[in-house]
Length: 268
Image (cartoon, rainbow, N blue to C red; front, side, top):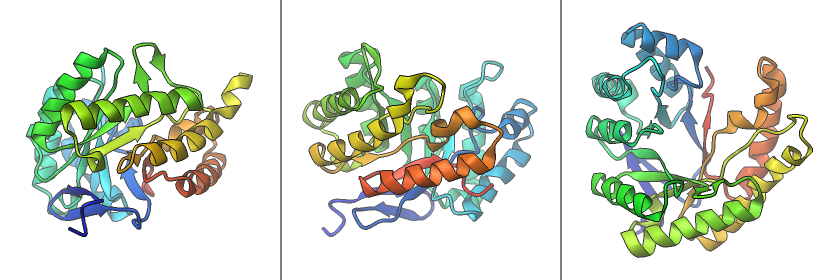
């Protein structure tokens, strides 16, 4: 099939991501950590107003919507189910695939049970060991979801190029050889970390991500690369002109080396 090398996603409408696809914008504003307004609306139970944020992102070019309701004052599972169900009733939003995003795997499962089409599960990692990683991957495979794999292992977060590559290659081998995952459904997030923090070793983080992206794409055929772009400029929060310029330069170079998608502010 001509789509054998594509990642296939779907809301009410299909999204095909292949070698010739443009960069995929994953809207970040339906994330309680990424939008104070969205967090306030969800905490106050104003789901209709929160839906308006989702709709605006789609109108402004988001091809996928990231949904994250991880907040200490919320019942994350209930909030995820309710918001996903409401999205399903709005064709203008539901036409795009969702990225069900949570550090709590039960919330990810609840979200996947509440959506139509083929979504992205964000995320799993080797942080708790190989056995836990395989168990979660098998569950997500049953849902038919594409998965985001973070560059974490038992020793912690990968910061430099070689550790990013090592963890992603190890994860890829486990998923394809032990779980039987389609390589096209694997999305690696090699950690876009913050630069200009005042700590000298952090200054290489952007370059490390971009160089790791190239190697991962070459050695893990079929996989995709994503990341949270706003993390890169977090030192300059409140200075939006500078942040937008930094994101543009970073994405220019990262996309050239194989970055396929990213969690971004889709114009709102």
